Image (cartoon, rainbow, N blue to C red; front, side, top):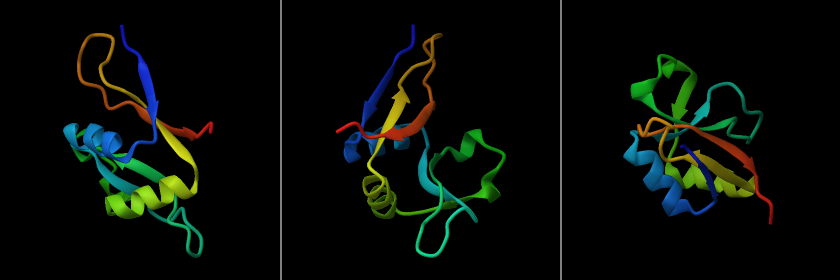
Amino acid sequence: MSSSEKTHDHKKIQKWAEERGGVPAKIKNTGKDDDDGVLRIHFPKHSDADDRFEEISWEDFFQNFDENKLDLLYQDKKADGETSTFHKFVNRED
């Protein structure tokens, strides 16, 4: 059985992502003016769309993440027990 958790704890998010080979990124050409664009955690080893993503620093990632009052909804394991990279950003509820 798989389950999801939600957090906005920076250390927990960074650790979860890095354990899976994830890097902070934005989708190119989605921002306007000073907006960084659509925020993502990119998993290069699991993607064939590397040219759509621009890696950013964790500092920039978390600044954008907090300014937009986001939480990360994520899954540690799939139903079959394999490590999961499933995640999505959701609005913070506080």
